[in-house]
Length: 448
Image 1: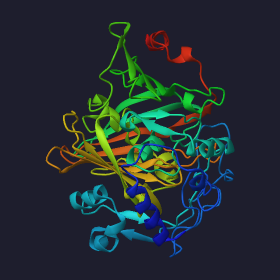
Image 2 (image 1 turned 120 degrees about the horizontal axis):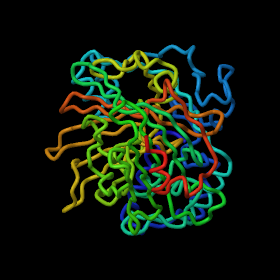
Image 3 (image 1 turned 135 degrees about the horizontal axis):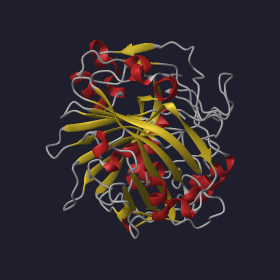
Image 4 (image 1 turned 180 degrees about the vertical axis):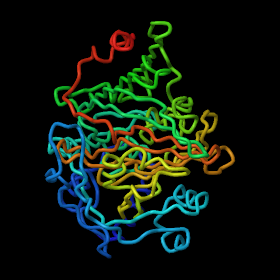
């Protein structure tokens, strides 16, 4: 399927934006697994051959991989860049760059993007594909797009008709059934000073992907225990997001070691500043976007080819932190950019709603539904922040990956490097018990 067909598909989706929020037709769904991949991406490459066809993704670990370590090695470490995008040749590639990337070039003239051969490595288990096919003809959004109904265990809208459906694909992206992660978050100020903001031991569970739970009410739940630095050690939070965010908002608790008690924390959502990130990100910025869709109108702009972070094993896993965090931006030497097709979704703040951003734009990878880039605008309409996600498909667990991400704040000059696992680990697990996310569990793990 070539670019002309791509644009035709995008135009069809845009024509249906004001239609009822309903599932794809059986006729449309027949394309899944044929002209489309099992999750709705175009199976074919592009006309120029710069994007190859999807042939199933990367399912075999490379020789460098050591099973059981909770870490990934780089299967493409021997590759050299095809070319580099710099300030002097920016105009040549501008049509395939996000506004956030252009803003980085403007602010940092020495910024560089090394572009490598494209590899469509995203892969998921067959049962996720099977559930996605079933979701395609039954799933629907409710409450103006803020709720999700009749979907489970896969991509809910592999053939999205509007922006809310595309964002639900992001919110339900496959990250495994559960995972335990030790990760660091760093802040780099305008002068280039690096500070460890927090080290967390996290347990995440995705009941939506629990095969035994055919009517999952909970979408995602997270327990964070802070273990470093000393000023943060002992703190903890639990977040629980529901499949129907319209009727059941986020539930959140916080453990305060000084008080030795757990309390409800309803403010850990939306545009509450994530204090551990030096003001460079809100709570709903984490993982590029999380939580309820209720404060924005989401418009599906269409699909386009863009240079995006992909197969970024060096940045996301193998490089030492000291070689990543440089003044101004992440070190361009550790970054990898590839040409891929992405869905573009634009969010505009609803009339009467409150949020620090007036507009947001998200770039969703067609093969995984992970948001790889975004940009966020202030009340004046100026770019305030842009973010980049490290996509590193896990070839052992068949999880598309994506943990490390960086938020650049153009107002303060600070950037927050969030979820850094380069010197830590991720273990993929089976579904977790409800007791692991009860407030009492947070208290027990947080006492020091």
